[in-house]
Image (cartoon, rainbow, N blue to C red):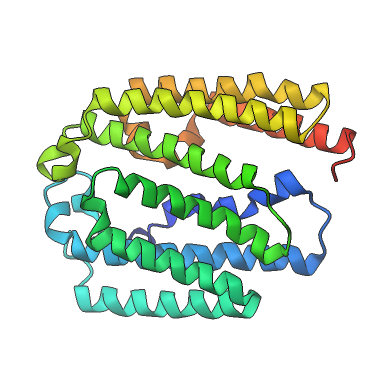
Length: 282
C-alpha cells in the first residue's frame, strides 16, 4: 500500500541524476558515488511528495479512471490527513538530505517541488505549458547530478535532456488521448492523437539532428559516430512501439520490459563509453 502511495514504480525517472557520469566520466571518489546515491534518494522522496499531493487534488477525477481509481487515495484506502502527514515527512527528509549534500542541490529540490506543486494545482490545465513544465522537471533532475558532483555540464547536455523529455511527454499525451481520457481531463480535448503524433515526429527529428551535431562538434572519432545510428534506431523503435501500444505510451516504466529497447539502449551505452575510453575523454 505504501509503495503504491509513493509510486515507487515511477522512481526510475530520477536515474537522470546519474546521467552526468556517462558524459563526464566515472573517475570519482567513494564519497562522490555515495553522495550521488543519496541525491537519487532525495529526488525519489520529493517525487513521492508531489505524487501524493497530486493524488489528493485529483482524488475525485481519479475515481473515474479505470487505472487511477486503484490508487490508495482515490480508492479510499489512505485518508487525506494521513496522506498529508506522509507528504510533509517525505518533503522534510528530502530537503534535509539535499541541504547536507549541497546547498544548491537543496535549492533545486525546492524548485522541483514548487514547480510540480504548481503543476498539480494549476499548470497541468494549461495547453503546452503542462508539457514544458514536465520537461523542465526532467532537466532539473539531470542538472542535480552535476551539482552534487561539482562538475560543469554543457548547454548541449541540458538542451538534449529537454528535447528528449518533450518527446517522451508527447508520447504519453498521445497514449492518453488515444485511450479516450478526455472526459476526465478537458485539456486532452486539445491534445488529439494526430497532433501528438505530429509533435512526436518533430521532436524525434530534432533529437536525431541535435545528437548528430553534438557528436560532430563536441566529440571526434568514428566510434562516437557509430553511436548515432544506434541512437536513431532506439528512438524509431520506441516511436513505433508507442504508436502500436498505448499502454507503453501511458506507462513509461513498461519500456524496461521491452527486451529490444533495453538491448538497444545498452548497445548505445557500451558504444558511447567505449568511445569515451578510446579517445581519452575520461
